[in-house]
Length: 255
Image (cartoon, rainbow, N blue to C red; front, side, top):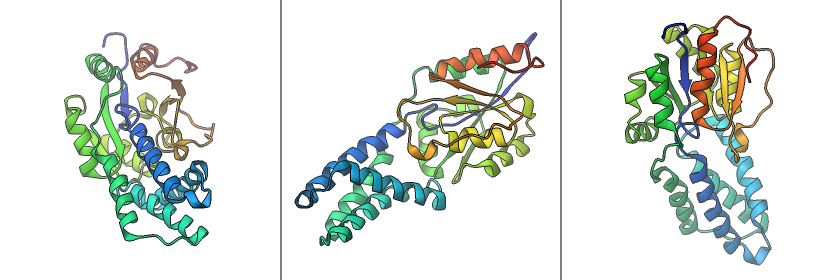
């Protein structure tokens, strides 16, 4: 890396390197359709169901983190809420259907974001340090990592955490002894990727999505020593990093 400074790049997995939210959206659309049919006599519409499920889902994630059981349980809790609201008699069979539906999201085939391989290949070839940091359960996330053969790029520097927050990120930074001025968090979640990175005074690249889970959307504190950059496509990362690597001591005002 003649004339450049090695950067340390921490990548999120879901909806940064591989698709995730769209599978949850597909399952939710099926859930809404099923609920509208079951509650047709009461005039319940999909938007009412959507708002209640989102409320229950977000409240639960704050408590249990990215536990696999939480999503199907949020569907059942939404179902129970409306049964109670309309004094409708529910059934174990219907709840079993919703549990099966919710869990099916984890059986979806993993699909890489466009340019994932090319992006990681180029960054590795340019000598940058690559790290993978994802939230969720070990078995589910490891299956995605294995299917995408991501250990090719990240080696043993793969970190799976039930909760993604500044404490978890700090643990990685300290374990790997990463210099903050040349370390980056790259992800799609303002809440779990970008805000913790800025709180830890490292740089952040926000991969903005057209349709984002409401849980991920928060306002950011502008007091960080790190720089924040917004991109719309994963393959934009290498050029952005290269500009910093060539001029690491200039004032960081790129966007």
